[in-house]
Length: 290
Image (tube, one colour):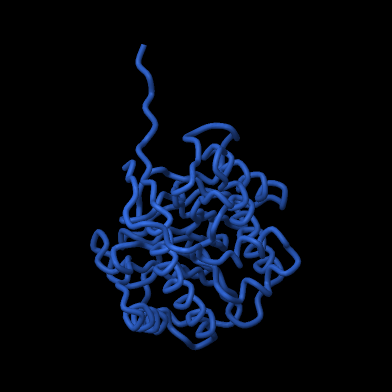
């Protein structure tokens, strides 16, 4: 009989999680600046310039730039583009558009990764509902990022949140991931599946939890640029992501943005996660399982 071995997952010390928090806050501040810059007439290329300036001014390096040849510091996916859209001066935002912005930064060797979806000016109520459902699904997954739970509990919570909200397309081909000294690490964090399966979660693990949904079907295709992923039926998409550390006190959202404190005021469980403060640094070093 052949036993299936679970993937090795990097486990960080409390001090290393603190350093990830510092990287996560670079990403948080960058996304705040980008959210404020989104308006009709701004190009996605303009947003990329802002992102690189913000990241480098913090003493960090863009995670995405040059990653497997990717040519920009952020991903900007507009309307039917789901993920990995390449910024361009030629792509100018119009009122009513929806844009997803994915951002990563490396600070002192540690990664932060987060994504938001934003309406450009006034948007259709159905598009706003799409954004709200996707963000709520991300938070549903985050609340399951607790020591002793299984990885599948996160996946199941994301899927159930989306399914309970309506007939949205839940993307399966792209997933969340482990994160730490590399941007993409074990394990893959699916956005669907049964609970109670997969590796057991333990303090020191860090995960990027990132649902992607559409207003239509779940099927996607990659464009000829080798990066941009679009919905096959042309329906609009949303993408939200946070980097989350599993700690003895529960999930710590390392990339939480300040404005989320007010946005989540009606969701006490989200506010608790968002407002968590760094602990006193532990001794340097820590075990790496992967």
